[in-house]
Image (cartoon, rainbow over all chains, first blue to last red; front, top):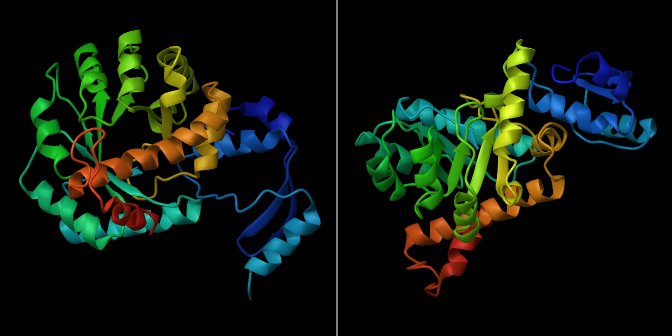
Length: 70
Length: 245
């Protein structure tokens, strides 16, 4: 959150939901999606990619389960 | 588009371009143009451009002209134009900015916050008439760990984009210096919307349809299908098919 600071963090209200392998489902407020995306555009170090933005955690879990194969 | 070093050896260059193309596809780009900063011309560049186009499966090659000093890079533009699909010039001073906006061989004018002067209304009119694009690189704005400098450059970038019609012609690029630099295009659009007050729909169109149109036209020119402005020879469809991959 280099570009937005604590204020941006409070607007996104980001929290972890589910993790499987290298994939992680995080919950954010709807208006925070764009802030997260802009933060990823200006990063220099981490390699984080948003796979998909979905409306429900159930759908997100299903996508992660389908992508991660043991 | 990701900038790479043209001075690298050919084999390493091919590996880096292939890696960049793979990353671009992963990020959601439908195609990739390998960009090379060129500050002086060497004979080997023509061969390297050709090898990259043939062996890496990229759409084309872009020469990013870096002018040195106050001089207008006329010779560099002339030499690079015959090998590349996209040609951009970094507007480092007023003379070069005016030249880049005016010259028909230049496709993209790269504006550097804090260095480039704002374009005049006449320059913007040239951009409109000649179907050119203005580019701002995210790496020129964001300085890691120095928020004050970042804020200054953001102010400069907004000032550069304060013209009436230039906002419709702006594209954003990551501007890194290696094969890992490509960013998700949706991330760049979000950055432009939040930081630079750009319209997301216009930005999306400029970064996809308009840019593809420019590349397609230049490919047709290089292949000999597009003779002069407004005159196309039959067989243009073959070029379009290749672009779709």
